[in-house]
Amino acid sequence: MFLILVIQQYPLGSKIILGIFFIAMSYIFLNYGMKMIEMGYVLKNKRPLYNHFYLRLRRLNKNQKSILRNQFSFYNKLTAKEKKYFEHRVASFIKDKDFIGRNGIVIGDEIKVLIASTAVMLTFGFRDFYIGIISKIVVYPSNFYSNTNKAYHKGEFNPRLKALVLSWEDFVQGFDDGNDNLNLGIHELTHAIHINSMKERDVSSIIFSDTFKELSALFSENESLRDELKQSNYFRNYAFTNQFEFLAVTIENFIETPQEFRSQFPDIYNKIKQMLNFRVKGY
Image (tube, rainbow, N blue to C red; front, side, top):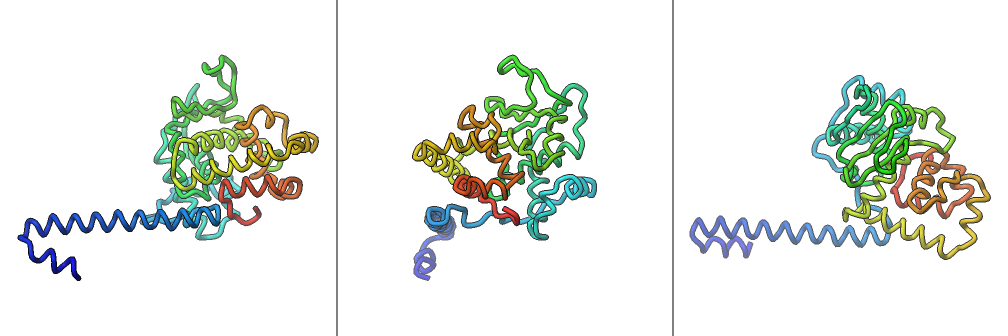
């Protein structure tokens, strides 16, 4: 009320300028206040204050929704409300990325939906789910020759080109057996999410990267843990190549065999769950 009385004393042009100024300042203070509140919440609870807030939910077409329902089992674990959010995110991810087919492969709904769904599954606990470091997704029919290291690959993520490159044959095989802890799409997308978290400062990226540091500290404080992991044979040997590969492999295991993971290595399991803010039934 006091501000309104003050503004009324000025000419019309000045009133408009002052009004805009006070609105802008109010927005800045409100935005800053919300960030401070959320930061306190994040420090205490290790997760965002909220994940889902949309002015309008995007929808998949009939064929895309059928693919999601019949070929992506994770989707069927969700509640009705979560399914709507998941569909919105899949549609948004598809719209945001440039899908490119190589060596004769035709990009259709199946390729778009299944790759986008894998990305959305991994980031379903994130507020920002786009994985901004990916701008294009290149799909080959099978393994392809990579100029990066002059070798044939099944998949790779190139941060310099902002490109996720996948063999469709191997991507599909990753979902044929949902309990073998071997999934190309999950593995390569985890690399992209990991690198993205190191570059971005949104709340989900901060939680991901900070939890990764906590996970690294867990290993440094417990020297016998690495040997225990190897001897268990639960994680394939490739996990012990470096810290990036270890994370990608552990998230493959987390998604595909969560109960066994939690039973054998509860501390690591809980760190991955915190890192992804994964709050889906069965995890």
